[in-house]
Image 1 (cartoon, rainbow, N blue to C red):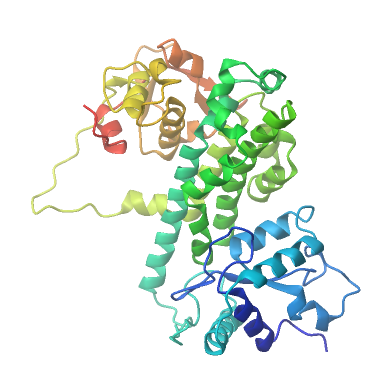
Image 2: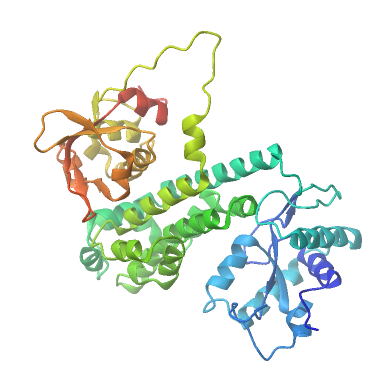
Length: 453
């Protein structure tokens, strides 16, 4: 009979040699953290036909033996299986050997506890929720069909943690997205030709440093994301992962472009395309790649919308009870379009009202860069947390712009510079351009609380 998987003895040996750490280079994830398991037993040669690096000639007893296995966190398990070109059998054997040579050896009782907890987790076949058994042998009954309040709470927390990481990624990589949104691919190509002295390159010059992208990922908190994976649906995790890949790889390709003196276009990158196709319709991916500029922005808008929809938290937030401060609640005053979008963007960037957006485009001493402010307000408009108004060409009154509008359209960048903000159609299905864009000052101040005036 074929061996169905690694034995408990094999798993115990893997944990003993792991130091309770992911084996992926420079990953600091702890495999068992309290009652949470983020460990995966990864096969160097694939476990099943069709899997990464599968060798049909390999006997089952070798396939599930310790030399063919390595422990990694769930995010890096996905990384090595999604990129077989970079993570070959030989490379993974090196990673395993290097990690186990440096890792501290766990004592027998700890390794055994981890192995049994992991095996129970696998046997229950969880796709979310808490680990089935902790190191302290506390068990949770998953047969209960009633509400599991702690599990529900942990799921919500995991979704919020991932969303915060996505927002942080937007702040860390805002300049590279901004760069893609204001220049066509051909214009960017010209910028990277020697001697690379076009002033616009200064907004992404930091990416010339090879260590810039890893530092940005660490600053965004992506090393914490693996702790959330078991609490969210596979689709939600795939959406998060696609966002992560899109930011990191598009920025790394800019790093490569500086070095090679020629533009390495993200539109032709295999891993980015694969991640987008895993969560978006093929026609949407075709639309994204077909844009001469602003393709990254459009891709992120699609992914953000998918994340919010899949999480279900937008509905929860809309219907969540409001706090009662002991007095009868009064009807909320209707929002008014009382400040121009350009002035609001300048406030987001500087923390002060009465400023001009274009002043902060290249400024360094700001609360946020102008490009980050630009990205954040469009995202907030798409999420429905900030209302934007505009005038339709043939009308003289301001009308509310539906949040769904922003999934396919954007704010014309040059109109902001000129002080007359308007929308820009980036979808063939859109017919309306809104001019003289305005927002509500109080809503902006609530969303971007600062110490400014």
